[in-house]
Length: 241
Image (cartoon, rainbow, N blue to C red; front, side, top):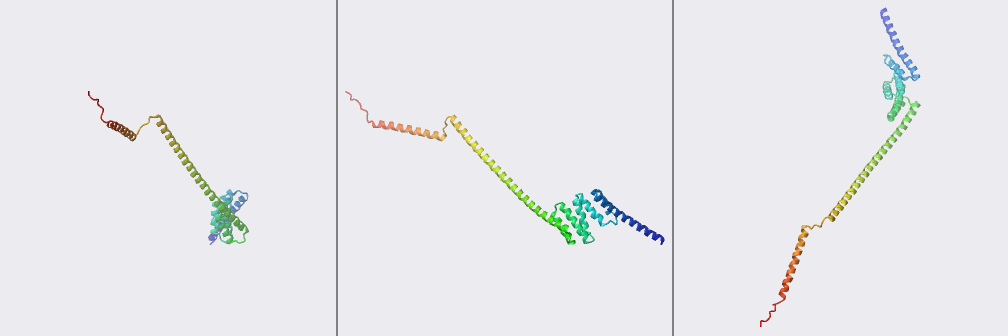
């Protein structure tokens, strides 16, 4: 029985030692945090969180240290886990509030709004959360308007680019047409010049027509001579004395 009591005392002493160790780590981390040494504070909070009897405060403060180091994605995950396992509404509200802040820094305004709303469901009297919610809603409106403007600007730019491409194409087609017309005119001028420098050439059809005309003309001449001889009558013959 004595040995059993001693064993119990040893276990109790060990438990107290570990509890004090976690508490001291959190206390040390808080001192470093206040000195804005967030990296070393993070290390102490992580060590405290690894203890079997780690307090919720170590994880909460770890999220704060990560946030101060602008590790917003990691901090958001940390606060999400705390909110999911929070033992009461107060802790849950605080976790959702800090989650909203982390998301706000990443300009995830719609998600930050949802986090702030969940925080207010657990603590409706938190004016700071209500203010952050209003701010996130206003930033979301501006973001949506900016996205709309960017989309309109992009559409206008695309339209201008398309118009420019069409104009360039029309100008190119017009230039090509003018060039073709110039080449055509030049070819015709060259052809005309060649015709002026070369003797006239008759086509086969023109030569045949000219030959037929000459034949007709010669036939008419022969016919006229023949008719003239016939119209003269019998030649006069002198009387033989």
